[in-house]
Each structure stands twice: as C-alpha cells, then as structure tokens.
Amino acid sequence: MHRGLWRNHDSWIMIEKLNRNFELVQEVYYPYQERTNLNCNSYYVTRDGGVLLLSYCHELDNANINHYILTKFSAEAFVGIDEAHDNGLKVAVAYPNPGGNTLNIRTTVTMLRPCKAHVEVYDMNGRLIHRQTLTEHVTAINAEDWPSGVYVWKVMVGTEPVEVPTSSATSRSGTSGSTVSTSSTTFVETGKWVKE
Image 1 (tube, rainbow, N blue to C red):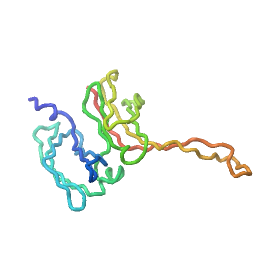
Image 2 (cartoon, rainbow, N blue to C red):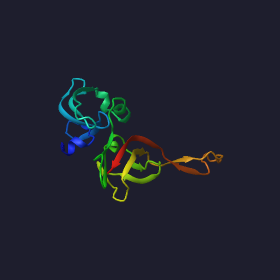
Image 3 (cartoon, helix red, strand yellow):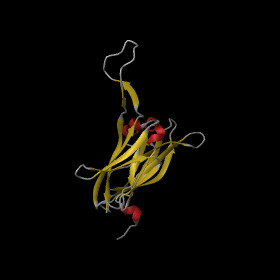
Image 4 (tube, rainbow, N blue to C red):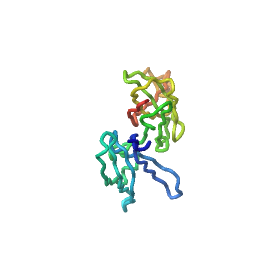
C-alpha cells in the first residue's frame, strides 16, 4: 500500500528562532531517529524561552508502530551549535533522504558566528567525492554522476586565515623573520544520505 511521499522518507521538525523583528536568528532540526517520519501536531513556547513539541511519529520499517512524542527543549538549546547538540538537535540536515540526482544541505551555521562553511561528501570507502562551500540557507549539490548507494556528508566551519609568526628567532626590532597563514576547521554536523 502506497502511503504517499512523506510516509516513505525520513523527516525532521524544523524549529526557527526569530528576533523581535521576526528575522531568523537560528534554525535547528529535531530528528527523532532514523527510519521515522515526524509530524508536529502542536508546539508551545515556554515561559523560560524553551519549546514544548507534541509530534506524531510513524516508524517507516513497521507500519503498525505509530505513537505521539512530547519533547521539551530548554532555552539553552537555541544558543549555539554545542547547546543544540547537547539537546538532541541538529544544525544541518540533508534531504530528500533517500534521494535522487540532487542532495540538499540545509543549515544556518554561518548565521551563528562569522565563519566560512563547507560540506564534504564521502563514499562508503571513505573517499572524499565532493566538497562545496555553503553560501546559501539551502545548498543544492548535483549528485547525478554518483552511483546509487550510501554517502556520508559532513558540514564543517572554518575561521578566516590568520598570519602567525613562526618560531624562528626574533630580530632586534622585535619582529619575527616570517609568518605563516593558519586557520582552523571545526566539525559541525554529519549524517548519511542514500542515493536511489
């Protein structure tokens, strides 16, 4: 029995934090678990600035398992990346999953702090097959030439390169003889994506 597209794909609930001018400040995603489909029935903003969600969960592998979930997220869950992770939330998602010739990465990590973000996609042998800068709220990746299978995606953020003095001897004027450019990259989110 065909239950429609939404019944056959993993899903997540998107929670957006807005400022007083209704501008997007942060967006996080609540995935209950893999191989489930979630529908948000209702939500409430709590007095402490948190969120209370009532959602309906449909298990994709067993049509007879359906249940309601009541989940509370504290206000701290919407402060930053680490706080979102500590509360079971994701800061990036890939969809549709499973998908076809396009893999979409949705994230607002660049809104949380000034940084450069990119996505890396690996095949199941651990080979990097794609790397792309994330410049939009949703970035579409062309997967047309990729064979069917399972892929791992990783969203990373990096700081701008900074000139740092080398450990060589400092001259009499107090400046070092040379500098190197350095930057750091931090892992933000990962997941699996299936190309049918």
